[in-house]
Structures are given as structure tokens and as C-alpha cells.
Amino acid sequence: MKAVFKTDKGKVRLHNEDAGGIFVNQDGSRLAIVADGMGGHRAGDVASEMSVSHLKQEWEAAKGIITADAAEKWLEDQITAVNYKLLEHASNNSECDGMGTTIVAAITTDRFATLANIGDSRGYILNETGFKQITEDHSLVNELVRTGQISKEDAEHHPRKNVLLRALGTEKVVEIDIATIIFEEGDILLLCSDGLSNKVTEKEMSEILLNEDSLDDKAGTLIKLANDNGGEDNITLVIAEFSECLRGDV
Image (cartoon, rainbow, N blue to C red; front, side, top):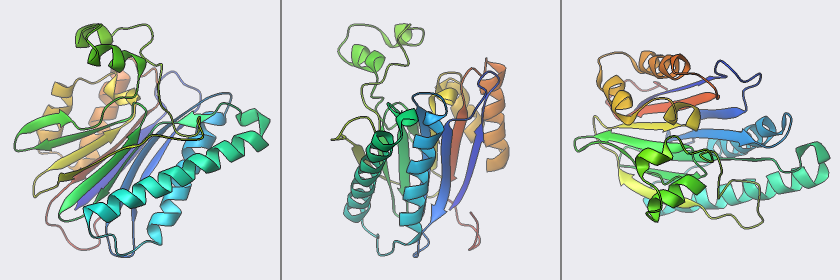
């Protein structure tokens, strides 16, 4: 397994409220995270960083998560715990009132990948069947598309595109989408914040992921393209590739 994490504040925002990373547990399995914080001056980065910090700490201490059921339960339990921590922090710190974060996280093993998401940060898979989004956006615009009220093309430029129906840390009970997919030799997983998916088309993502560059160069190219197309938002991504590599590769 090879993986790379990159984040960029973009060309417009003063601060980067995204967070994420790639973390390894006691068994050598990886947890990749992208979180896009929101809500109030400097509160968005608190929400995203707290979420990543908690999941990192718990994952690095974890072991024995070798089945899809165990991976799904771990993500559900730990993201629920993060939700409680964010709500508690906001209630004790008025400057963080109303903060929240999206999250997309993936546990990758040598047999499967288990993804969890809340909000509109996305997970994509590139495999022998092509390139496709495997998470569902929890946004007003996506709900309008899903119910047939607007087209997917209309959604791209909808004035309320950034309105979320679900976020981590905003409600006492959080609903988490969790799914497991087969992750095989040659498959590539892409996690990203909407700073990338709003500025780079799926066709462009696929073409970049398919080229012969290193994962680091592919990540850099994706971020550069998002910035070239406006860069109005923070841009964060993880690329994970299932490949035979030397032990110790990130």
C-alpha cells in the first residue's frame, strides 16, 4: 500500500480549516482522513483538527481490526465519540459555538477498504470498472438532484451548493454513512474536500490518477489544477494505491 496526504489553503482563504492525514495502527493497517471544518472565526479548524487528532490517537493504539465488520464498528464508534467531543467543546467555548466539520475516512487493509462520511467531502475509487464516487454528499443540492428537482448539471452552479444537511459536531445524534468495498491490486482511492471536487472534474481526476507520475506528483497536480480554476476554498486530499511495495512505505 502506498499513500499520500496533501493540503493547501487555496488562493483566497486566509486560513486552512481543513485537516487530515494517514495513520498506521498496531497491525500496519492504515486510516486516511479528510475533514473540512466550518463555523465561525477560527472555529472550523478547531473542529477539523480535534476530529483528526482523536481518530489518529485511537487508531494508532488499535489492533485486531481485520474484518469489514470490525472496521465499520470502529469507525462508527469513534466518529460518534468525536461528535460528542465537538459538541462538548463548543458548549464550553463560546467562540466555537456552531462549529462543525465534514469528514470522510477510510480504513484500508490488504483485502478491503471501509469508508465513512458525513457532509460533502468525498471518496472516489479508480479500478478496472472505471472512476466513480463512492460516497453520497449530505448537501441540500445533492438532495435536490436525488429527488429529481434539479439536474446534476444545474447542481454544479447552484447558489446554495455549500449548504450541508449533515455535519459532524452539530447535532447530538449523528448519522454516518459507512460502506466497505473490495480493494485490490492496482486500485486507487481518492478522498478529498470540496475545495478539490468543486474545481476539478471527475474526468480530470481520473486522467491525473491514471498517469505515470508518483502519488506525490499526482496530488500536487490535482491541487494546482484546483487553484488554477479559482482556488476559492481550502483543498485537501488523500490518494491511496493498492500496490506491492516495500514494508515501511507510507
